[in-house]
Image 1 (cartoon, rainbow, N blue to C red):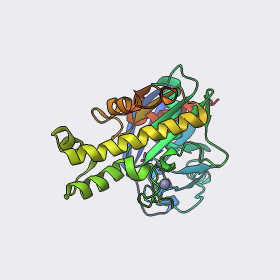
Image 2 (cartoon, rainbow, N blue to C red):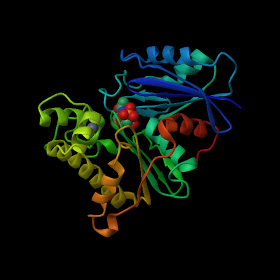
Image 3 (cartoon, protein in one colour):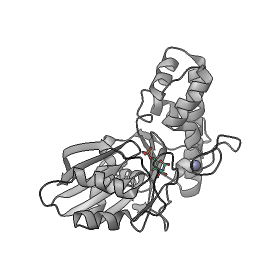
Length: 290
Ligand code: BMX
Ligand code: ZN
């Protein structure tokens, strides 16, 4: 069987064919940030295999409810509310797709074949453009009745913090995402820096850079502790460009060790890599869904 797997992010759309759990023929294109769902579908159709395939599996940034896509944070991906992505893809490609949130899909890949293999209760965090999260509780992926389950990047971190694209103030995503680190770092250092520059400055001993990163680390670990208090997670896996930056997970772990012991949990690096969303969506579409 061949699954055509797609991962829609804020900057790129990745696609691959998945056969026997292996990703083949990976390709990508730039995400059309026009706000039009039909433009997303056209971009996906341009990546479709020329030969027949058996299933379509889509991981996407945003809230997925009954196959329809809505942005929680439209700054990550502008899209009309409730765009019927599954229906439009079925019409365009002739195969009804499974559609799931990107971090939820990646959590499933980590649970089935990655860092969280063997744990029953687990949270995956991607720290990238935004902060995505997927939860597996008692071996079941949590999507929630409205698709919102796991959107832990929008838990409140600082009541007096910056306005988030979702409409709340001080979300974790406004403090610890790659976008937030670039914004806060530029303010603090008085020159435009991206997240990688900020990490480089901190490594060279810049105390301001280290402080901005330290605040992000603290906010994330407090978020982990809150989630642990809510649903008793066994283990956290962290991925994403920022999450996998040199020393980031070690810093999370060190901070976590300052928590009261009852809130401390192992924090490990994600293993399924940048293509975890593709793999997780394919696994889910193949009925590997508990
Ligand atoms: C945002 C939200 C989540 C997503 C997360 C990570 C939108 C469009 N996206 O919090 O659904 O999982 O970003 O997304 O509201 P990424 O694109 O940064 O990986
Ligand atoms: Zn938010």
